[in-house]
Image (cartoon, rainbow, N blue to C red; front, side):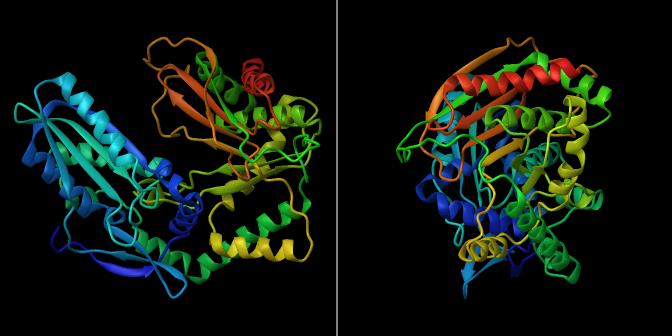
Length: 434
């Protein structure tokens, strides 16, 4: 890279949040890396592939940004010049190329990034008969979230087709991390930060102190956290119909179904979720390759008389959670530490809901599109180590022909039967509403 834009400034809210999360994870930090191995059809000459990626580095500043701790604060340094190593492997055929890409992806994704010293991106290319046939891309979560990763891949595809960074930049408006940080440090940004932290404090001092029955004995610190996956074509088909009938978005329908089942498990009518929010509500954010502050707090004081009423009651708290999911996380952590030091017992916010589906994805009216048929199944494919501060966490994912609910839970609080009850209950609420 030569002569790109450079700069220096405070870290963004999103960079700070992910940086602190990676520090807490320690050696487990690589599991936050974003990863992709994809075929290149019908193939691309190596010089063209390298040109496209160089243009991508010019287009998106986050890919050339290092995070450095200075004087007790986190700052970002955008490099105008530098060199990115690219691993190029040569193989004899398509099957060998796919295997090499999978091995390279595991190697790239399994290592933490040296955030103060290296760019937050790793690139590998697998060549067959002189043409690139597989691309391997791994990004640090400090450079992009899932949405940002998808935008990076989209732009890389356009650049590989002959477009340029200047041409793409001229046709759209999007935020770069230094500009984002400057906006957050402005009077308007500071007001937004203060309002979001107040939202968290208010709900954590008024919400439920426990949401699931706690064991009488101190749980084993090495207890297992079972992992369950419900793959449901029926849920994918029912969601858009339920949302239409209830006059809301399908994300709110799912959130209301999860609130209903959490209340049933806990034997109460009040629920509180930490929700992961896309925060891509403007064109500048929607087109950006960056990582945004994403943790919102959803507090529903009481379920409705029926599911439709619960959906209606969820809309206001959901909007509040979305509105206040951007903030300076170290300041919020200090706020909550001060409350604890003053003897305030905070609400239980160990339940996490993460709807990862891309709302801009093109879907047919039935939610299935041209996807191949998928079988409904509930599996328990793995057991994870203990996750401090988590009682249960659910990721919602769109897969070909279905929606998947992926749940990990504290084995001291929920057994597999109750996990199955929770996931299948969400599905049943949506199917009944549709």
